[in-house]
Length: 158
Image 1 (cartoon, rainbow, N blue to C red):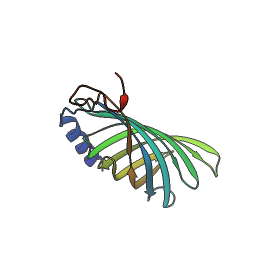
Image 2: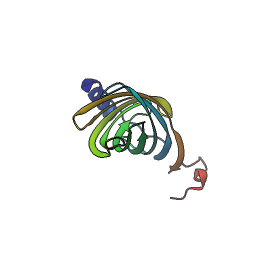
Image 3: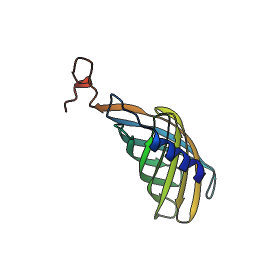
Image 4: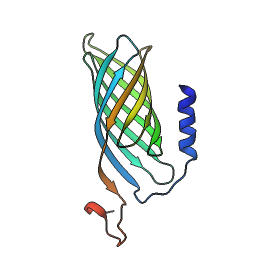
């Protein structure tokens, strides 16, 4: 898996493009199935992401994820070319049964942009979690999108 993530990261960094839109915000639900760690289970998350797609695209996302026994809060730095990308960042987990707070990290690789699939590797307190998931993202704000007549779309001022 490390080789796949490294390959995706390399492809993303070498792919250079210019786009009309310079920044995009997205928000949406995520559903994951964890098949690593203690037991197999589903989790639901809500994630918010900021994208700057000028030159090399980069982003920061954050989310809150709920499962039967745990609540997680995470933030990731990410990069991608729209239909594929990778991210990595810290995660804080609260175990509801044990009433314990733990920290760790996670790495994610995804396919597609607004509706897609992802694979997430998470390590918390020496436990490895492998998750596959699906998501839907809605762009809700943009900046620097100008029409051909020079006016901003959506009433956003620079």
